[in-house]
Length: 260
Image 1 (spheres, rainbow, N blue to C red):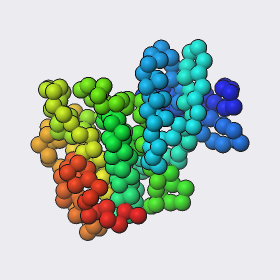
Image 2 (image 1 turned 45 degrees about the horizontal axis):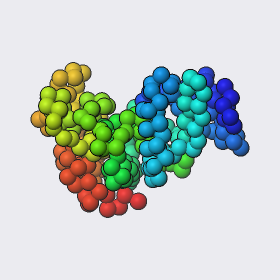
Image 3 (image 1 turned 120 degrees about the horizontal axis):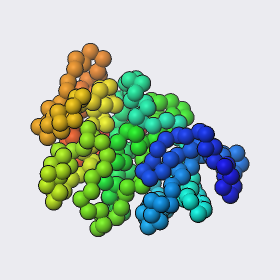
Image 4 (image 1 turned 90 degrees about the horizontal axis):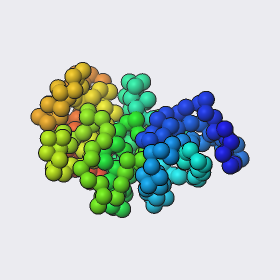
């Protein structure tokens, strides 16, 4: 499919974003990029809110909008293409070095800090592994990450109490807000779960039953396993409650002191 200067390879799907499907595309100078195709029946106001937020953010750990196009049926958003997602990496069960884990978590937190500084709420999704892209041009042990899908982001004054994302990455107050929607919640805490997974190889609240996961998150019942292959530096961070890492200690925590 040709759309202006871009050739969209509709037979090569890269993923599914909020409200759209992401395909491989070829841009000017034969550059390999990604194209998110959004059907206009989603509503133009929601689509153009997403575009306005993408145009407003300028940060090395947030996805860059390269160009847009539209026709009667769809809106096309063009982005840089990354090597893999954090979710795909976690599926390999290859543990990262202390340095790589620190670097990834610090970049996620810095991207979220930047969004919050602009008054933008991502409503829970952007700190989850399937929404974090990874550039491993040099090595997976020296990664650069990018928070990708801002389709659910909104300016905080209009965010309401809507919650999005996977329950297993939500903080306790988000679980509670299903019952009491007036409660506030801070999704930076979900980055703590990502940190736990990066340095241990497993989810801290694992269960095959959703209600068990919710109960474990609310009670803070972490799943620990033997530390035979875990370094002392990693043990230190695992000793912290995973969901507190990213909100209470945040970027000032000593674990990040040597992240670069």
